[in-house]
Amino acid sequence: MSMRPTACRRQGRGVIRVKNWVYQVLVHRTTNECYRNSLHHVPDGSRLLDVGIGNGIMLESLHPLIKAKKLRITGIDIDANYLKHCEELIRKHQLTDSIDVCHAAAEGYCPPQKGCFDTVLFNLSFMLLRDQRAVLQRARDWLKPGGQLIFAQAIFRKRSRLVDLVKPKLKYLTTIDFGRAIYEKDFFALLEETGLAIQVDRVLKGEWFNSQCRMIAASFQEAPLDRRCEPAALGAPAPRLDARNSDPPSPVILPIPQPRATGSQGRKPAGATSPVETGPERDGAGCSSLPSAQQ
Image (cartoon, rainbow, N blue to C red; front, side, top):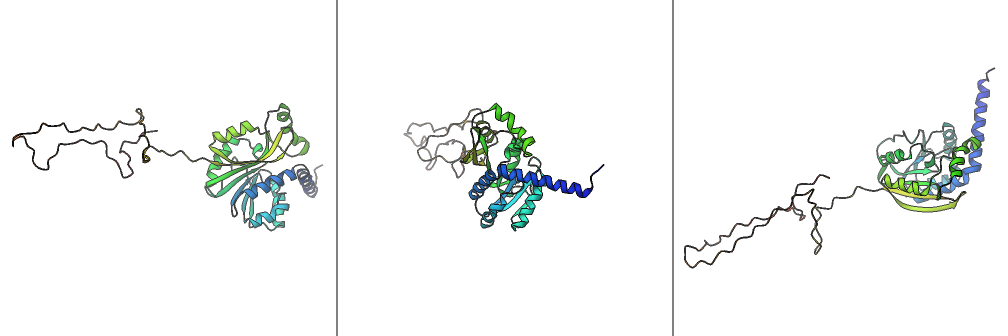
């Protein structure tokens, strides 16, 4: 016999309450610590994208900080039930002008416009992403110039088979997905490969199984400048040309000394000079007008 709609709704609300209670008991303290440090790190008036905002339980204690710093936060999450609870807390603490939420996965999220966030925050969520590299590559377009990514998460310093086995299965016991383990060496290598340079690396607290809860802020590195046409400093050695990519400068031909003429027939007219072939033309910055090399 099928359940009545009212009974189904009651059961659904009961599941949400249990899930939120488990979340609060197991990860509330760590979530608050990570979120507090991340919000203190960003400048006042920043616009943030919170990847994996969850049920918003941290708003209970941090809503005064969000208002004081005049932050504007967009939160995304793949769990619709979490977002319903988060929206309730947003209304409860009068944060509707500060926070909006979107039911979306990071792998497919498209912001309102390119480069609209000062900071992208991964607060205990990076280990849940299916394709971490793809999300980091997409995040470059989410950020304003000079923007940053903040990762607040547990990082394991040594690889452990036990952690690799147990951590992904905790969701069957706790109803909460803790994702896979993030190892320090692999994580730093991934940041470097995607063009991210670490600006801040701060230990927040020790965790279990030889891990640390850390806050890491990183920014995308700009493309290296082509310095071949910058004027050389006074006294600096001349730059070396790459024979494979640049044409050598034309030779300078000096006038051939002529013997002094004794008669009027061998004397040059006044003001006449021997032709001199100079090297390539140079612009106002002192750069030779060589054809640009293809990189």
